[in-house]
Length: 426
Image (cartoon, rainbow, N blue to C red; front, side, top):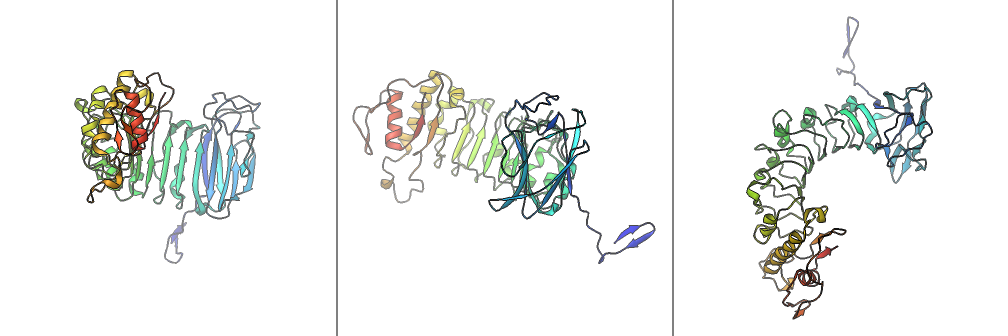
């Protein structure tokens, strides 16, 4: 029922459902879309000097998009069926995919802030919104909440967005808003905590320095759904108690670029398979307890002191499932000759003391016969190189004897040829 004038009108004893069909995005410039890193607003010749960007809307069935450009012009086009999905979109390039609409040059000679309205004939079918490397301005659509079947929402590298939506659809599984806000948002939107989001990416988008006012303390409310969390460069100094530790099905945690010194809140995340952190502020320059990280496969500490490297043989013993020591930018992390050679020495000790030369010879009760084998690590292009030629040491027999390696080059040879490591060296 609803009210019309002074009358209450009933529709099968239910309120009529509000249908929202449009999503308003704010932009500027002489045309749409513009690359995020093209700073000019008056480039009417259409030569986009920035990185190629695009936007795409995906529908679970047939749909039609009508775009109101805010200059008196509109464009209507049907979604295209591509690989069992209905899609439509734009590109900043003049070379288009078959589902992309040509760039629109505004006809009112106005290059300032304007609103472009995207309207869908079947809004309930919209499943994905994707903007990447396209410059957006002002406010993201606040009515996104009404698109109930939306599954994925990505706003990446938009550069000059003012703020996040406050509410998101309850059934939205994946949210990515990264490198897009003019100033970091001061809180995680309240509306997220009533959703079933599984993948949450906010790189360089939030200021979580105050764990209370920023809502960081509430992140544990997503414990029944959240599997991936990315708070890279979000000004976290303190992880509040009973927050991240409650995320008991978390598969991937990415929190580099923060000032965290105490990692005790994450040490019981037994489901973690991927962990990416910065440890430049770690307490007492000592590793935290890895005892519960037996499922960890990919570990990327993005800063290492010689003291932390020295602790690898003991501290890393629980990481029996690790297959990628993913030091992103290895040569920036292990960035001196001393660090590089120390890293090789300590990793060799870890492997030599714990890995099996022949996994089939492991005891019957050993659950991790492949421990510390087949690990990928290293990097190219750096100035730090291992001491010694990468060659077999005296006494080396593949598969049965490591020989007597006397320098880091020979230890690398053993790690590759007897333990299956994949190592990229300068």
